[in-house]
Length: 351
Image (cartoon, rainbow, N blue to C red; front, top):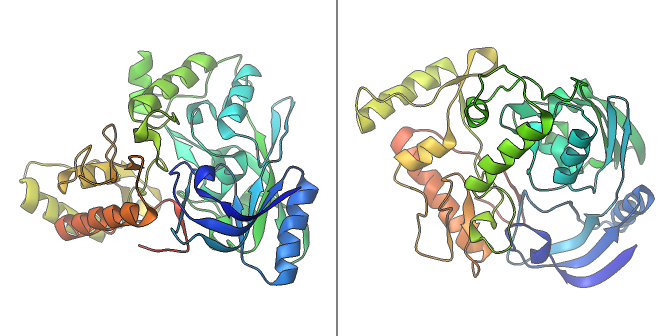
């Protein structure tokens, strides 16, 4: 277990932003991870658990407490069952499942961050969500003071949400278990029209696993969503805002605003969601509210490749980033009456 005092956190995040932590502990085993968190709890110190740092915005003033970097490793494949240590790079875990001929997460190729973060956010992209394949999450329960195994239902998954977000001070993810599909080397049915078009097939079709993963990677690269140290469009947290999900009444009110602002013939993106609600595109809202790709003149700007990504152009501060985020959020609310919700976790700061 490595321990550093007054340690920089910026280099541990994909934004490359944020001040130092009072203490940084690098945990390479489950035991070290549990002990690091438990020791800080005994001291009464705040704890920040960091995986790949791809979904976190840390204040310029840093973190007053102990930051624990999850550096555990291990991927086990037994038939269609896969167990991944929380500290494993998620992109590598997807590559391992594709190599094993198992379908279910291939369209999540290239998603940055660690495997342990995937159940927290219920990570999803290109028609797949981890909640559809996760069977169990092994976690350290800081309240009970021991390791617990939570089944899928106990994780309370919903769109970009889970019990781990509802109770952020309680659970530390140690391992994630998946049940995948052996489809003879083929992908799961393609649910996302853009992926199907890229592969020259129809939605619902299956293609070779590796082809599905490579197509998704190509799409993500085109949007600046695959990490590249030389490309400032990837110095981001990916999608900064979640796609709004609206009740029927809210949808009707939204349509009135759209037609008043953009014309009666304009129809916004609409996707069926649970409980009769409708999901629309945050990227579409941001663009139509006057914030196109590349928007901004300062060190924090909207990506030149995707309107949903806010980026650090190399010299930004966290406050620069949040100033831009507030401008975009407030502009969308003023134009369309829709409140945008940030997807990254904010540490020591707020919108």
